[in-house]
Image (cartoon, rainbow, N blue to C red):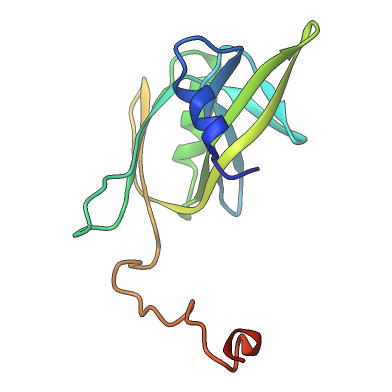
Length: 164
């Protein structure tokens, strides 16, 4: 994974590009792991097999008064969807997850995929399962808005080279 730089942003927002951008979702709990990609075919990224499954994200809100949350709707029609419904219904512990942006490009006749951006640490805070869809709300376990800002402080005991 790399930081999103200006070249990546240019490729991402370009009207014409040689790249395809795919959202990905990874969830894991004690019993199971899910690696889903919004694509028509399964792909492998850095040795991780992502299962093709149509889904949509709503990006975290930019409201400074509430912690960020991601709303995800997974289309659960077909054999893959039915399998996901059974697995989600059997969960006893809220899974934790990662959302990612995967870049695909054609190299010769084969597609190559790289994870360009990922944000981990999300926990499923609510789960809805119907016969045709799975809806997830993901947030953070801790209230990051009200945490003390002492972890990243630079003091002489931590970074003496900065205080010469």
